[in-house]
Each structure stands twice: as structure tokens, then as C-alpha cells.
Image 1 (tube, rainbow, N blue to C red):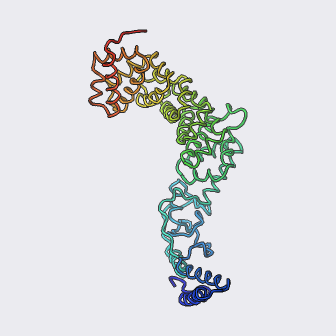
Image 2 (cartoon, rainbow, N blue to C red):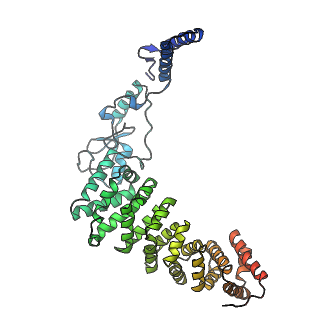
Image 3 (tube, rainbow, N blue to C red):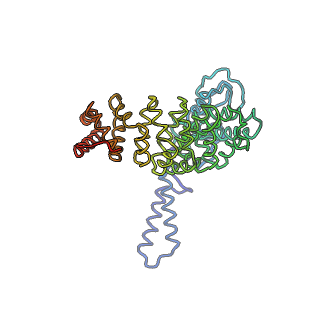
Length: 443
């Protein structure tokens, strides 16, 4: 039957009649007994139960209806070449991950064709119908579905990280791949506070300099992959061991390790609270060192992390004190990451020491040249915003900018054709010229 019509042997109509009697007795009597009210509440609850669809949780699920991977009721059962039955989305994910064995028997598969198991499906449909349960819809997106198989696999790999170096390298390599491809593994990490210490165990010995380079790279990359999941960001940043090992990775290891450490810091710094933690950790000077070295693979990750960290005011001062202005201007003069570094420079221009250093290190002609030559409206906007701050802080630079304007009309053109913000800043500088017609060099 599609819906059970009786609760404990009583039909819905009988329940309604009994409820009417109870309510009438309670309403008509000035001194009704408490038991009558209790029975009325129980009868009403029974009626509600009849109207509410039963759920799977109300019944013990036959083992043969459970997918061995998800352990949940199968909605699209299929047969593997070994004869075992699985729910299609979960066994398909297993195959898509490159496995060519049966998850249950470990037999090598003769082929990867999945055959619908109509008999089991019909049995499941019938079982649900008899209990008034609506058959769940097939799972389409299982990226975020955590299965017992996922949990067991992760725990197995984590245990290997405490064994021999060979076992550690094998486990770290697989963790790197799994955490990149499987959101469910990234979700699992947040379930237990024990995962992070186990993951970082090979890097936590006193002599970390002796860590195998490949092992080091794979574990730092795993941290990067895990940091993508929002629920992991806070836990990772608040764990001193994680930030300390990322800073250590910025200083040594393969260039890929250093780049991925910078990328992990960038990802973790998406949270404002993490920006403060990372800024206080001393990571900024090592990101700047990575940027200064000029390795193309690492520079963009380092620049992205620095930009994110400078979105909070206290980190601007740290970044300036660690020599950011010189590093950034040198890279820009070499035409490296100009757009990205201009964005950082624009953030730092609200710091007085940064503005002073820009003037001393030749930023003005560089910025004016970018406005003239760049095709990026965003870069032109950042340039003129920085120039606006400089010329209002240093009269000598205002004179230099005015001479450029007389020669090329750079700001006038930008005031006509730039973005709305660029026009506003360019006009602000031009108005300053008009208010100071007799500027002279006073240095």
C-alpha cells in the first residue's frame, strides 16, 4: 500500500472521531481531567503521523539494498564485471579515479561496463512502496558526499605517514592527488582535529631540512588542496604548526614547493581573521623574498598572497617595513607582473612611508610611462590613484608630474578617456596644477 492507513490499529477516521470527543469534553467541562488533555495531544500526534511521509530512518534497511561504497540505499543499482552490485554514481566515481579493481573483492576488472541491475531495483521499489516510503532520487553530484570508503581510505593513508620514508612518499603522493580531485576528502579533514598532526607528521621532526624533496612538495601541495575547502581555512590558519611549516616551505625546497606554499597562504588569507594571523606570523617577508628572486612559477602566487594580506591595514605597515616598495618597483621596471604589482602598490599608497619610498625610488616616471603605454584600464587607474597620493604628499613630485603633462598631456587624456575613478583622480591632479601655477623645484 502506498501509505499506511492505520496507526497502531486505528484508522484516521477513528482518530478524528476520538479527537472530537476529547476536545468537546475539554471545552464543555469547567473541570476536565489532565488525562483527557494528554490523550487529545497523543491523538493529534497520531493524526500528524498519518499525514507525514515515512522516512528511510524509520525502517531497518536490508543489507542487500545498501551500496557497499556509500552504505546508503541504492537508487540506480548496477553490476560490475565481477558480479558485485553498487550504486551507479559511486562506482562510476571509483572507476573515474583510475581504479581497475572491485572495491569489495579487489579482483581485477575484465571491463568497466556497468550493467543495470533491474532485479535489485525492482526489489527496492517494492520494499519502499510497501512501507509508504518515497524512493530517493538518484544522486547526481556526489563530489561533496562523504562515504565510509572515503573515510577508511583517508585513515589508511594517514597511518602510512608515520611509517617508513617509502610508505610516507607513497601516501603523500596519493593524498596530493585525492585532495585535488575529490572534494569529499577535503571535507573529511575538517571532521577530526587529529588529521592535521598526522598529515604534517613527516615534516615535524627537528631536522626538517633532511626531508625528502618530493615528500615535502607532496605534503605542502596537499595542504594547499585542503585549504580550498572553506571549512578548513580557519582550522589551518589557527594551527601554528601549519603556518610555521608553510613559512618553512617558502624558504626552502623545490620551487614548486615554495610556489604551492605561497598559494596555500593566498587561499587561507581569504578569511579576514586569517589575514591577521598570517601577517603576525612573519610570512610576508618570505613572500617578498620569493617575489624578489624572480622565479616565474612562484612570483604570481607570492604576489597574490601579498595582495590578499594587504587588504587589512596592519599588514600594509608590515609589508612596507619588509621592503615591498623596492621589490615591486624593480619588478615593474623589468615589465614583470605589472598589473598584479600595481594593485599591491595601490593598496600600499595609503601608508606614508610607502609613498615616501615610491618618490625616492623613481615611481613617478614609471607610473606615467605605464599610463601612456598600457592597454589595461585597471592599471592606468591604479597608476593615477598612486600618483594622486604622491603629488599631494610631495610638492617636488607634483612639479615632475606637471612637466610630464606639459610634454605629453598624459593626465588630460586619461581625464577624458579613463575609467570613472581614473578620470576623477586625473582631474584632481590637474586641478592641483591650476591652484599652484608657479610651482618651483624646492628640493
